[in-house]
Length: 549
Image 1: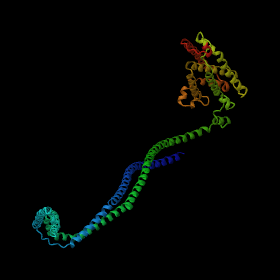
Image 2: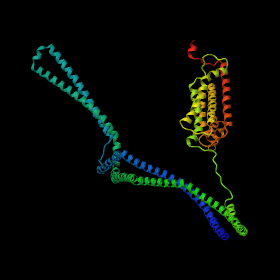
Image 3: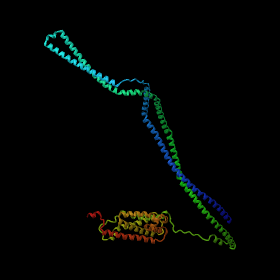
Image 4: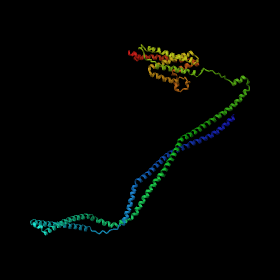
């Protein structure tokens, strides 16, 4: 045995060496994992920024593509107009190259002078015709007077011929005057219309001088055609750029955002699990440390066990020498093998579960019965005003006392007769039931009289607390600290214990009965005081018929 312990001790030392190496490795693992998780956290943050940036890039690229398309569509008509304008410019330049320069040899002064002379001559002609008309009229008037003086002349053919010629001549002179006047007006209008031409002659001569240079501009048709082609090429290039952004750059950016999102999700999961990984590594390091400490303790214990084994071996050898001198009689063998005799005895015998639960349920029934009775019976209304509080209480006991007495006796009798309950002390079971019913009755009435319906509510709360604090189903030691604390202050604690003694155990119930009687008597005296106080303050209630009278 000592040899085996020594081998175990050697193996434990080897295990300690391996555990030390394991502890060192686990410490390095903790450090490495801490650095790794820190890097994962940084990568997770960077991937989140990458996702946001890729999404923004895709959005901006789409906006650029949409804006290019929108601008192209908005400027399509302008580009068409520009193209048409360039075409017209090209055609105009070509026509300009075909124009032959005319020879403008005019003098603005001569034009103005001739026009003025023409106007003057026409005016003079009009004046002469007017004078001739006036002279002709004078002649015609003189001839008319002569005819008037000599009526016979009117029949003279020569006179008639002269008169006709004078009329024709007058008509011609009037027509000539009108024509001369119109010609004068036309000459004036021509003179007026010639003034812009006269004013424009210097510019026309200047244009004639510059016409060779303008014809040289016709060579710019190649430039306008090149500009047209450049505009068309630029428009086509913008369309290709927009299509390229929409069909290649935007999907690529979206794929980048999707991939970055997946990367971020994976890094988030990895980051979320990194805490568990760090915790596991820390636990591993802590466990190896504890294992190393345990191995050290085991080595010390094995050393002590080895020493003890050696001592035991020595003592057994000494004992064997001593036992060889003792007789191996049966009495000696029995004394060594069975030095102690075992004896079993039960403190009580409970026939079944119903008998075991009877103390608890009897107490619950008595307390609930008194709470229900206090809610039904009116402890405040009186037929006539009592002299003092005791008489008021005594008046109510004429109904109350038979109830609590009948409740205790009837419940206990039915348990014996109907359920066949077997008890250690049947008479004391009735006594405990009566005392408990009395205590519960007076206690409940005290709260009912003092607080009214609020008192009944308080009793219901107390009832619920007693269900756990009275130790009716399980020992109170199995409950928590709260119920252990209120256990001694619950009325049902003592009724349950007393009934358990009289039904199953057969022990003394003096203490329980003392507590229950004290509770009932104190409650009864306090109820007298409450009645007396209400009587003093005239807080009485009478039947409705009595109040009407």
